[in-house]
Image 1 (cartoon, rainbow, N blue to C red):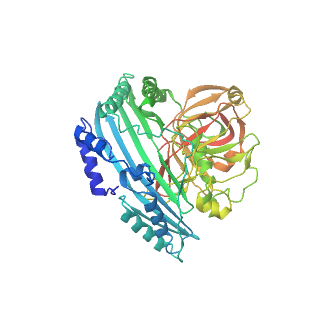
Image 2: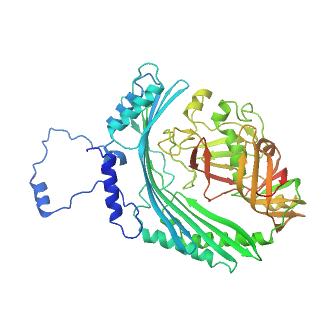
Image 3: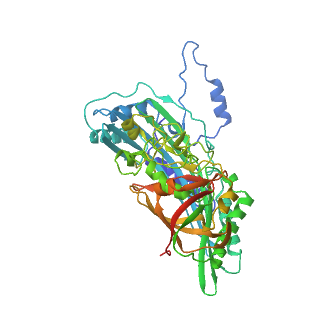
Length: 531
């Protein structure tokens, strides 16, 4: 197959867009096939059969070979070019992603667009030296040029590429067929319009309704000098509703969102109703909210969404690059107790269709479940290939990148605390006066020390073991390792959150998941007003 250059790709994309009614949503870029005709069928029928003694080679399959002509031979030559200056390891990452977004505001759709990302990144490792280069087109020439650039950055002496690539097929954790490209633009518009109008009509006090929708069809391929070849689709969608209301000259805003590695069947009428009504409910709740007195007090973290505190205040400290460099406070605590014996913390790529799920990471390592804290003891970090080599362990499937323009880093996937031995009602009953935190925003964390500050967007006072008034203008200020050691109770109601969590690190953003059971922390400093 003749490789498809960037110009031809854009021409096909433009043709697909021009042929669609309504929004300019990409219709796909697969090579078109000529229409079958009677003459064509006759010509095929008249063609002589192949000679019996001539073996017909098996046709190579896969998204990138079929659509862009990037076959195994091209990948092996690219890897060999990457190792031509003495690298220990070379890796090729191909990506083709189509993402469409719709924004509803002030009673109408105000923005709708499509973004297409197409390109390749090549990474070469030589000892502690990393060379990285990328190309924004998928041709053999562009790939090999990027490989030679990366090789020059990590130069030493000549190395050899793999003789063959072994295609791996990890168990899928999300659908592996195109999900969003076949969906008509009008169907997406109708869904967003429905939620926006439902938020606007949710209460007479509502003065503004905003809805953001995004859907992605993403295909990636990873090939490396260890002989690994992995290719998969990674669907993604989210719908995020924001409500602003006004009463007696006072305004409040809140939101609710859901996200999944799924197609349009994810957005059932029940889910769309829930997104709209929950955004309104959480906003109106703030008009009755009080500000608790500042000071140190017990805090009960609600299931699911409050797992963001676990992710930010503790999870980043478990990423191996921070520990390898001695930045993380957990760098000297491997094998030591960091929490009570009923605390177990996990990071997993295996949570079916979760926003942070990964059947294979961006280095070609199959997804897996990694226990970080087991029965209160720190037992593992989150590793990519570089940190795993440093520590002499296997990669944990946490090598992640934003897109082909970036090299991978150790990143979280779906991070959660396992269920514990306590009953949720028992946890609440143990607190005479404290705070019940449901949802957070505007978190800040110092990775090295683990110091954090989170704004509680939705929460309640706990008085005599019961939830009473909703709260507002509350910050939780503490230290991740210290709060981990102060976990006194963990309930058996673990829940993964389904919101639109995106994690930033070193200028890269990736989708993540998180979760928590009901957890009691004996003391966190509560106070402050959101600025």
